[in-house]
Length: 273
Image 1 (cartoon, rainbow, N blue to C red):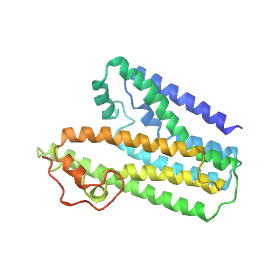
Image 2 (cartoon, one colour):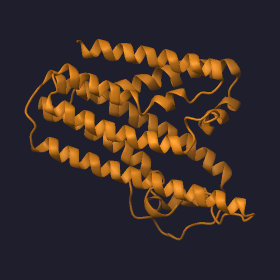
Image 3 (cartoon, helix red, strand yellow):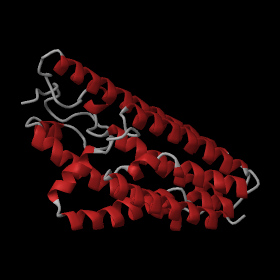
Image 4 (spheres, rainbow, N blue to C red):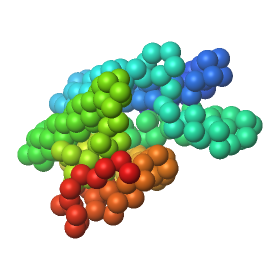
C-alpha cells in the first residue's frame, strides 16, 4: 500500500469529520478529541507499509505511548464528554463575530490543526524512504523521548492535583490561596507540559535524521509548525490568566515561560491577588 495516500485519506476524513461535528454540536473541540489518536494511526500506517521496519515500529510504539498519556489526561478532564469543549474556544468566540469564528473554525481548527497533526508525524516518511538498521542514536532518542514523556506525565499530574485541590477548597467555602499552579515543575516553567510535548516531537524528528543521515529536510516542517502553534497558544492562554489573576504578572516575571529554568528573584509562591 502507499502509506502517503492512506494518510492523506485519514487527514481528509478527520478534517471533514471534525468540521461537520462542530457545526452539528456547536462544540469546537473535536480536533482536540482526535489529537492523541490520529498521529498514532499515521505512524502505524508507515510501520505496516514498511513490512514492520524496526525503526518505524519503535517510532510507532513511542507515539502510541504519547497518545495513551494524552488520551488519559484529556479524558479525566472531561474532554470527551458532552460539553467538554476547551474553555478558550468560548472566550475566542465571544471576541469574534459569528461569521469570523466560523471561518476560523474551518480554516484553523479543522484544517490547519489537522494538517499540523499529519505533518508532525512525517519524519516516519523519511524513515520509510531510508530503511537502515537501528543504531545507537535511535536508542538515545528513544530514551530521551521516554524521559520527556515522563516529564509531561509529571506536569499533568501536578496540574491535575492542583485543580482538584482548588475545587475542594471552593466546595468547602474557602478561597484558594492561589488561583494557578506554581509549584513542582511549574516552579521552573510556566508551561512545563508545553516544553515536554514539543521536546517529544523534536526528538521524533531526530529519528528521521538517524535514518537519512541528513540534519535538515522537509519533515522538519511538522515540529516547527507545532512549536509556532504552542507559541501562539501560550500567548493567548496567558492573556486569559493575567485577566483572571492579578498575581500572574509577577509569576511571569520570575518564571521561565517554557524551558524549565531556576526562577528569577523572588521565588515564594504568590497569592492570587
